[in-house]
Each structure stands twice: as C-alpha cells, then as structure tokens.
Image (cartoon, rainbow, N blue to C red; front, side, top):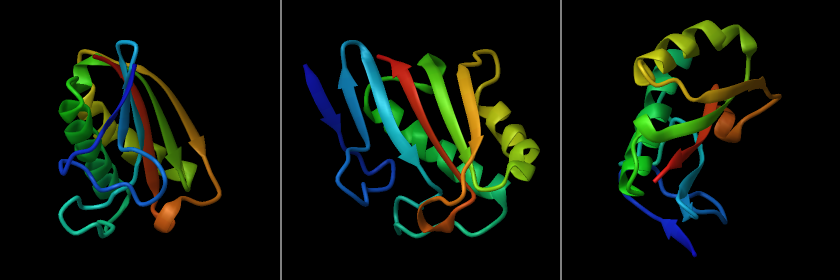
Length: 125
C-alpha cells in the first residue's frame, strides 16, 4: 500500500508531487529546499543557514510520516556549488551524530528557486 504524507511541518509541495510517501515499511521524502513552511519563502543566507532550514523541514516531514532522523537510511544532497560542501557538512553532522545514514552529494547546475542546497531522504518507518 502506498500512502502520501502532507503536513504543515514542512513547506507545501510546489509542484505535482507529495512531501513524502509511505510504502512497504519505508518513507520516501521529496527533496526539500530552504523554504520557510510558514511563509513558503526561501530563507535568505549562506549555505549553512539554508542547510539548517532544509534539515528542519526534513525532520518535520519525516516525523509527521511516523519516523525520525534516527531511522534515515539514505540521503542525497544537491549543492549548487561544491565549494559549499564543508559548510553544509558541518550543519548536516549536527543532525546525524551517532547514526550516520548512507549519503550521496552532488553538484548540480541549478536548483529550484536558485537555492544553494536541496536534500532528500529515505527512512524506515
């Protein structure tokens, strides 16, 4: 069974997709960009500020789906500039301390709304 997740703990979907989908004991979260869930506006600031907002969005959605960051098995980080890796990684490491999920990090030519970072994840329910 496939079940969609919608919550005000993360930004509303801005296209034809769900914030998250539960299926077969997993929850798959769509990529989050640094949108403030209350205003739907991009959080201004450097990649550290934007990464913090993205991870808070992911945390809110994964918890609303019935899981947590401690149950994340895989993340994918998209950066508009790989020179931002160290700053992103410093913030990211505060959210995944004892448990470190598998991760891919890639540089992309452009992200929605010209943000600096986007992250998606897969977690166990």
